Length: 123
Image 1: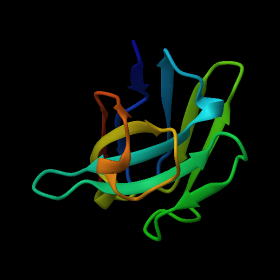
Image 2: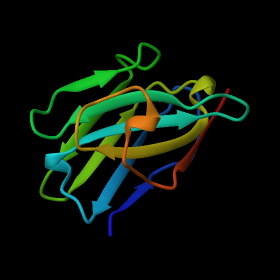
Image 3: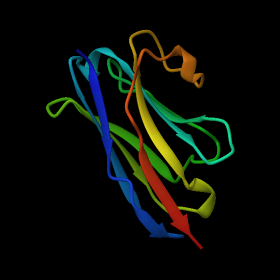
Image 4: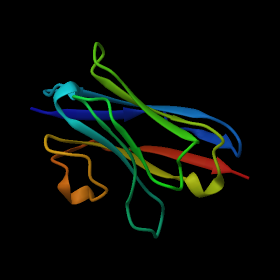
């Protein structure tokens, strides 16, 4: 059984940093494409970043480019999302998802999802 668990969410002030973790059991991240998504209250889910496990290629939404960094630790089977210079508009529940085919900004593409971790950024 595949299980994905996010952690690291917290409440921070604008300009602060957080590192989210996405740990998996039942699959090897190195063989998958791992995406981070977020959903703010009243808004649609949006793709934030993605990493290709096989090549390490990374992708970012324009809204987070230069502030967020996605990385993977194959030994720990964990993917991280380092978030710097956080803004109030980054407030959302952040989800990690895995797909065996490609990185996509469409959440429907992904096969496995975690339960999410809350990030709240106050001004």
